[in-house]
Length: 511
Image (cartoon, rainbow, N blue to C red; front, side, top):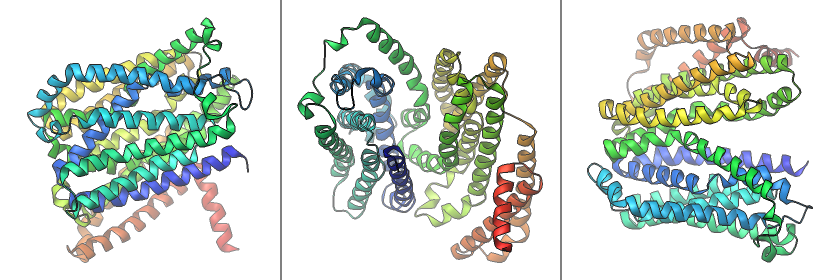
């Protein structure tokens, strides 16, 4: 097995381990030991530092990955690209820090009215931003050296475990809120240090001249003006799209400023639930992208069209079914988690955000098509449009509808963004990923909604209203309705791939 396959498998295992830890931590520890305001505090701190860190990177991570082959003259010689990868984000961090200090008073005023608790820990944000920034920098360095699994484990498992310990120490009264915030921030510091140590350890063996040469920039090599100009152009292009990538962070940041941390805490739990809809997309999308890219590169547009429709319908099927199963079990989930009554107000947020994730999962193949085509530069316009619309919609709708407004802002923004993007792809590339099979899925979903309503009236009362009864009802209902969905998808031949899998399973059982 090659190094790429090994690292990919290990990285995937780390991701799923992190999902399990995050699920336990979020639903059975955070909701039990933290108030909604404290949940909101941690969410805004993380989202703010992720936004600040991604901007401070100055698109350096993407640029280093794109241009690394230009620096590598042999397997061990890299002309100081790692030193450059450290210096550029440092410039970005200095710029961020200057702006943060200049506008600190304004930010304190904005958040001080409704999120006073956050202003007590504003001084933590620059430090936490630095830790997250260089955690990401050295994670990228590991990727360049073909060693992804360890930093992936540090971020997905290590940070979440350290945060979990912080929650428990605070929940059991071992530490005060001040110490908890420091421990929470410190988990990213530890992650950064672990990544630095790991990169230096592998660099001592995999880089010519060892660690001393690894971070020494080869300025003579960088005198090539053409390379600099191309790197700068690429970095500016990627930086413009960086805000669009971080658009999901805007909701919590605007809520903290306009409504308060307690509401942000409820929104956080709902956001986490809705994000489960994205899980199939992360796997299916990653598998399809190289195939789609190869088809476009070879000019095989018939294959590109077929692939786009196939990816889109499978994403639509997977995302809608996941959202459906979440929705029919949401009452039970809020009944089971500690202090679920404090968060039940976020049910509509789950549905609205879930629908936005369905739109993204189903339509994002259009972005891949445009990115891989000769019209890739047009994505800059769409990225800017997405960012501006998100800012405008969050600012307007949160004031009207609170956390539902934040969710609605996300849904409306994505709907408009993908409507324009799909139109552009159809006009320029003559590809439209939607088909009659999408309509079949919609009809099946509508039938399942009716079945759930009938279940709620006829079957659910038989299980009672106690927690045990609710859980039993959810388990039985999920199995029955999931099987009904599978039977409908199979019988209507929505997906030949799914039919093939079912046929193989049935043949094995008969054998």
